Image 1 (cartoon, one colour):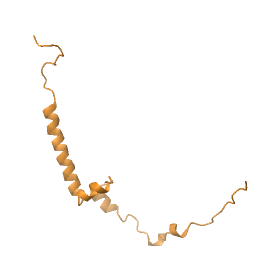
Image 2 (cartoon, rainbow, N blue to C red; image 1 turned 45 degrees about the vertical axis):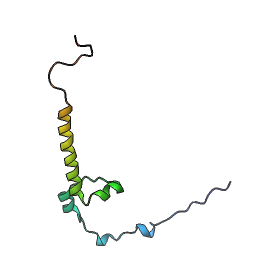
Image 3 (cartoon, one colour; image 1 turned 90 degrees about the horizontal axis):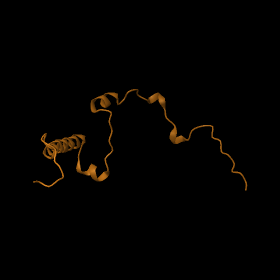
Image 4 (tube, rainbow, N blue to C red; image 1 turned 30 degrees about the vertical axis):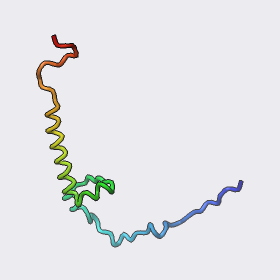
Length: 88
């Protein structure tokens, strides 16, 4: 079996070239501070249901409120604990 010849590249490929003289430092910094740094990627079918991040947040807050109210309804009272035996 012949060994594969090694290809040595002295420079980057053209698609990786970048002209740093045109770069702007902190271009998106203010927007990042305003919008926040957390990024969540939605699946395409979910993203179709929401037009922007505000509607996603509104839906999630509604879900949180609903789960909090449901949790209170299903929580046990502070009374005596139930026993598994028959009443008598």
